[in-house]
Image (cartoon, rainbow, N blue to C red; front, top):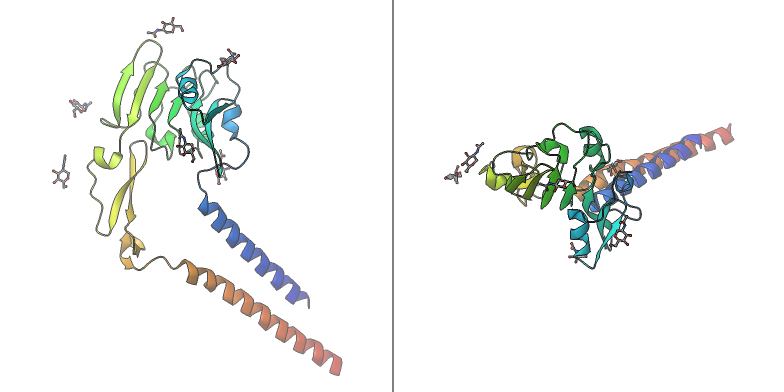
Length: 239
Ligand SMILES: *[C@@H]1O[C@H](CO)[C@@H](O)[C@H](O)[C@H]1NC(C)=O
Ligand SMILES: *[C@@H]1O[C@H](CO)[C@@H](O)[C@H](O)[C@H]1NC(C)=O
Ligand SMILES: *[C@@H]1O[C@H](CO)[C@@H](O)[C@H](O)[C@H]1NC(C)=O
Ligand SMILES: *[C@@H]1O[C@H](CO)[C@@H](O)[C@H](O)[C@H]1NC(C)=O
Ligand SMILES: *[C@@H]1O[C@H](CO)[C@@H](O)[C@H](O)[C@H]1NC(C)=O
Ligand SMILES: *[C@@H]1O[C@H](CO)[C@@H](O)[C@H](O)[C@H]1NC(C)=O
């Protein structure tokens, strides 16, 4: 009976793990409820009058929360802008702070103790319209990553991120296509109907059979243990 109990617990755990995994895959870039912690960083100056602030004020559906500008959608708060001027940030802290914000249009970073920022520090930000950096910084990426670049004594401003597939004229292998996935970054994704190594396998990824493949053996194991344990109990009684 002990093993029956343990195996059912294991299968329930497995099934709940699978459903949690499926749930997180469905909503990768939305926040339900609270704003991410980066919006609550403590900074020396207020956001009033900054480019992110002005952008936020120009749309009635956008709101300011802490250092962020966000849109309340059905799925939660979607952060579209973040003003982190004079927040004492290093490259590493900035990069991990924005790790899950893939929809940023406005980013301001003047007055931080950074020396250099690279395109990899921006993760999956593929739609940046306005990025302001400390003076003497160069815009991250390569020639052509930004439509406009400007600089003065107070900042470097990079505007309108361009599609890396087009900037680098990328040709993906057969059965795949290029997708712009971040500042000066792209990846080749399999076309519909192809998957696997180098997109060589045809047919949609077998999600259903994969789930059944895990569930059926678990249920079968439970039944097997139930039957064997029961027989053991009966034999015990007979003795
Ligand atoms: C910022 O601006 C808002 C209105 O746009 C105003 O209510 C608030 O007092 C200002 N805050 C500071 C610190 O200037
Ligand atoms: C805010 O979210 C709504 C609903 O998703 C969308 O229709 C709207 O265009 C968004 N506004 C901005 C400025 O992105
Ligand atoms: C980003 O999301 C992942 C998985 O959803 C989570 O583990 C991580 O803590 C998040 N990071 C931040 C900075 O919110
Ligand atoms: C960037 O590209 C432009 C035009 O495509 C060219 O004139 C310029 O020399 C390039 N700059 C560098 C640093 O490669
Ligand atoms: C730089 O900032 C200072 C102080 O805010 C301001 O007085 C000055 O006009 C700015 N310079 C430029 C070129 O925008
Ligand atoms: C892009 O690549 C294709 C094939 O590799 C080539 O034919 C085309 O001339 C290239 N275009 C530019 C603008 O470099």
